[in-house]
Image (cartoon, rainbow, N blue to C red; front, side, top):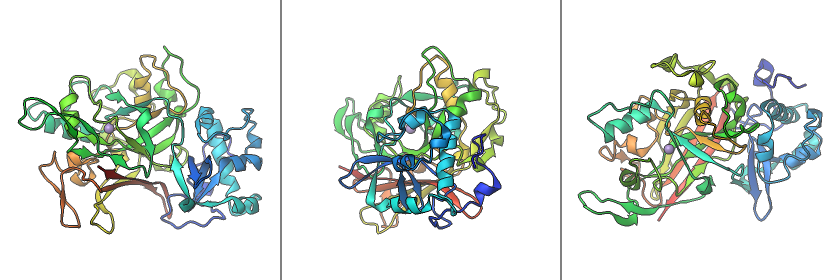
Length: 430
Ligand code: MN
């Protein structure tokens, strides 16, 4: 039943149906099979997958013997409420394990009766972090975003600094403040130099922003300290992708960022979406990257990918103020507009011999595209506040206000179905 290459992209898979019925706009048809961790009210947290509007506990699937044929010899994988042990598996085993879940969910599955008893409505659980995240690094991989920010902050020079086209620029973030969807974001206080002031104050940020990013979880075997992960095998270490909201306090950032980059402006909270969507589920949505193939100037060999494909993921940000009855879409872009890939980020990050461990998280940096509508943060959308956004309640926004709810979503549009990430949502509180 399993395709031993681990690749699932066959006509059969695309046309596959589950005994759990899903609408054509559901993000979680049987073609997706993402991984996450949830918690029922008052109950323990557990590893799960999602099908339609239901979650399914992975430990229960393990008990049914669904993974037995994989001969994992690793003992129980889903005992703890984190996916780290699963993430440690080599890519082929992760792919085969996902395929065996997919097979168990098919219309004619011999496990149908047992699994139907185990389906828990998504509305009855809350998302938790999918893994114990050891280290978190945030990049700056959109040429559109980096160019826009460069134009705003250095209007007289080249918008891109001299290193930008040669390496994916990044900084080390804080894993301790990464939270799941639904956790409110508290407006941070920090050191700010008010306009026209000579000395800084300690005050609540007035320029709170979001950044729409995608994240990638690292998996497979760690590289030892001192050794590199070559670009040719970097893809084997990507367990899957999530949406990341890199909340940013622009006034704190402006005062502190030179010369070492962001610090307190971004360490107060980072939100991630609930479901890790695998590279196998997204196979069908790989697209050529004509705008950067080959990258110019030519890349050093360790950053030159064997093939250069992007992911055709539609990304959207929605905003709802306290006075609005429903959210309003404020931006729409595409992840294929990124300049640097996660494979390049990982090859670069380990080029000095920096070790990675299963559960580490990379984030792409703000996902922006060529059009105004595709800009992935308020800093760019409102051009530093000079072009305020008009909201449906009659108010305008330069930056976020208390009570605003920011909701991000992302999905790939297939022929008659979607593979998506669900929603990442949080409310701004004082
Ligand atoms: Mn960022």
